Image (cartoon, rainbow, N blue to C red; front, side, top):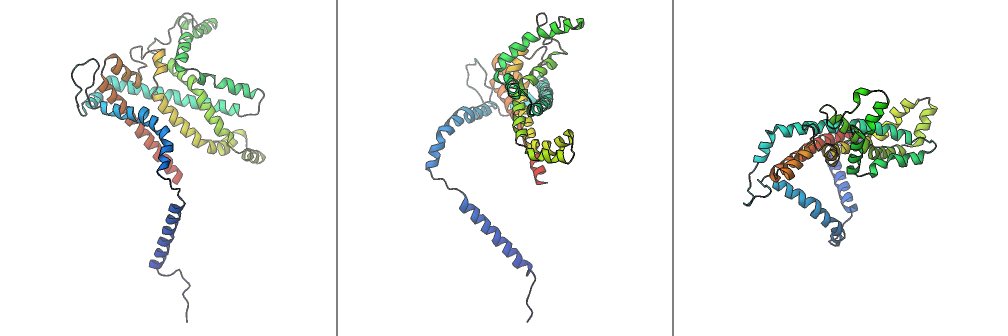
Length: 323
């Protein structure tokens, strides 16, 4: 009698695989913790403020975007459908502010990351006075944006500012008396410099935390193999730091695109709208001209754009992880 030693018919193999999958699913369901109805009462103290202060205003703002709500009007607010969005897409001022917002977001996020990465690499070294240097590096993070804006307005002051005074002492008379925040060509670059300075501490601390999670043994092994500083960074440090860098860059871009207070204090969107970011434009439409419905539509459109960018970024990340 001949015994079969092969894996068996294909149907039998598929059946065993399906049974194994079902077994794993049942084991996963059995291991999954089961929460009783009483668990909801434990999360209610944290859930209620989130619903009342975050989700509620968000839903109200989304609903307001489809109305003709205005300030100071006596008649009831009407539902206008997508009329606000139709007007928004034809508004050249909005598209100008959107373009300026992208320039501002990229102009702040990119140099902010590279400067913060260099500072984080420096603070990660075993140097003397490292801890005081770390404390000084986060000082701008502890300052409110309004205070930062007022301080830099004094720095950029055309007559008594530190910047013009330094340039004057260096013999650069061409910059004497220049109003950096009121010039059409200098306002946006000057504000970008402030944005980079103000946001560097948070990025530096995040990258420094990522650097400290890189095992020292890998650096030591690479150094024993003869790898230089650049090669160790490229083959050891960056692969471990890359997820942190991508996450902080994405968050910084979103935060910079939605900036308001810093630019409002520095230039109030001027001169001639050269620094009017989308949030400043929405603020003006809502609280200067009373167009609440139109401003809400503007905010909802920007949320949609940011969501699409995040979805593309997340899809690329998941695709890279699968590869």
